[in-house]
Amino acid sequence: MKEEFLHYLWKYSLYDQDRLFDKEKNKIIVLNPGEYNRDSGPDFFNARISVDGTVWAGNVEIHTKSSHFDNHGHQNDPAFNNVILHVVAENDRQVFNANGEELLTAEISFDSCYYDRYTFLVNNPYIIACQDDIKKLDDIFVRHWLNSLVIERFQSKSESILKIFSETGNDWEETFYRVLSRYFGFRVNTEPFEMLAAALPFRIIRKHSDDIFQIEALLFGTAGLLETGLFKEALNDEYYCHLLKEFTILSSKYSLQPLHGWLWKFSRLRPSNFPTLRLSQLAAMLSVAGGLFSKVLEATDINRIKELFEVSASSYWDDHFVFGKKSRKMAKHTGSLAADILLINAVIPVIFVYGQSRDNQDISERAIGLLEEVAPEENVITSEWKSAGIDAESAFYSQALIQLRNEYCKKRKCLDCRIGNKIISLGKKLKEREELLLEP
Image 1 (tube, rainbow, N blue to C red):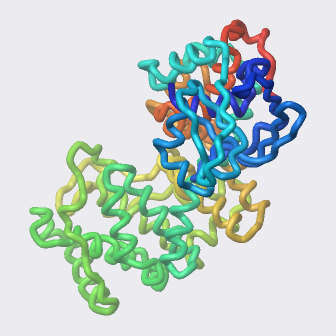
Image 2: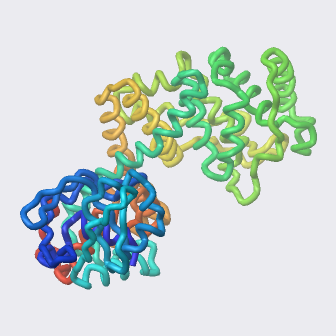
Image 3: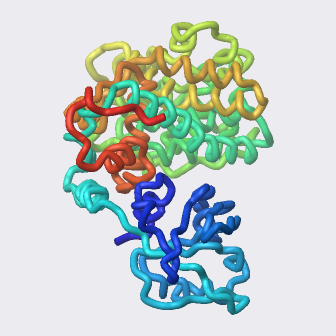
């Protein structure tokens, strides 16, 4: 048995409260279980209990066996001197705190159905362990938890965005450029796009916002995709030669150090996702006077924002996928799906963090609202949830389901998940949806 399960029983009072006794068989009445502590120190702070008419206030420590108190070295740690109750599944030894005082230790009793359902979930072979039981829960209860998970997902992204913000000298345009570039790699080329954004600061691109050709030269050149020999047919290609000539001048002016061209992946990619096309499309997005992020903040609705990211590669790429090799003519547009991916993963999270950093809740709430206006992602994870009976009506819910699956289901943190928590707490009572009560 894991301690986390005993923590769960204690936190939600799912143990037999009439069978909690001290060694003299005095009943222990729990007035307040305390505040759950996930950091170092006792498991629950500021608890209150009553024993034989005396009220005690302090901390509670929980172990599967009482001897684990000594095994963990707590008997030498003054931080555990204020433990008023040691709750265990098995009291196999007397234990004492650093002051030499014996701890009040009590064995916890509970209905085995809770543990049976808990072990069923954590040992379930499916990633979504509760896929059969979740259908029995009330929709409002599930949706309320998903609403919380969206905020949690935004907050988990905030740390990395704020780190970039600090690295860029508190420049939001530069921060946005780096985050956007990362997701422009669409997983396969994420790393080289990140390296490119670090090697080619946005402040340089901004100086050439009125000349998309120069922006392309900066991007292709710094990316290392103008390396001689990288594309066999490129040496006789007029556009390639002009880009190379322009980059030679600009790289000297700004002391730019190109990446190695071999970092970029082309194999197993659809030609429409080749980094050559993506870089030209990125150049089109960045050729905006005043800065792209400023335009995002000025946009009044989701359609105006999407227009900024639904762009076409320059005309050269209408009949090329790589330098020097002609292909069937067709415009290379980012499209609505690609724009949505950028909105979900880069644009909206940065708007959210921007609002948080300025203590402007209106901006942060606007970011969350925008997510509800974007179509839901269609991937393996959302398909798994659909099979479990949970549909995502918008990106707001698909993001919540991704957070739930990756941070709770996959890690088997069912006790920390409100859905898993609810299913376990109902035990044998989990039958049909209409029989269940909502969690207060």
